[in-house]
Image 1 (cartoon, rainbow, N blue to C red):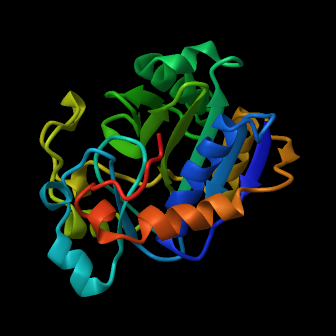
Image 2 (cartoon, helix red, strand yellow):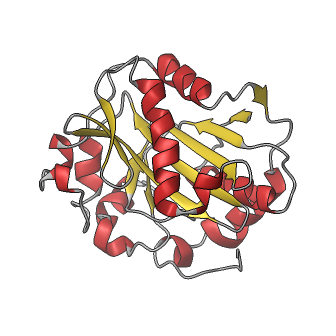
Length: 246
């Protein structure tokens, strides 16, 4: 598996790069599966492909603080990211990993490997709900995916030194919650992993045996996606498609 450890300057570029990697794989431009790692320098809200932003985000709070709201290509609920939140993305071939063809199986496949990698560092890590990673009753990772004909994009958050209070300030409780949350507010539900960033990064890289650096990354595809979709409020706030990405 190839590794790309790259954080771009803006939230729009970073979200676009995940989609660009998926598109490049679908186009036959990448011969290997890919693990991407990145960590934003500033806070951002990222909403799911089918999310109604006004229902899941305190938009006025974001706007008043200059925090961007970006819509990703995968599903799931809104998340807040920023410094202290390691983001990861996997682009996996269905031919190499047959379990990734179905949504439920893909969640189980990816998160079981993440659990195996993290348990030696933090005992009690488990896959909970549909796509969470948690220690006991406290979540530290939310994940989502986009399945295409030949590949899946699977990506998520790993909080280790994140300002958890920011979540409460920018997001109400989501409209759909896993049973183990029991209606708790964000501040009582999300906790940082008690490990250092380099330990976390090394565990994720080892989990996926990402031993080689990706030789090139789809810079032009990323730039095009930003220009044609991720820089438009019609996409980010309303989910109105600005281009044909199917």
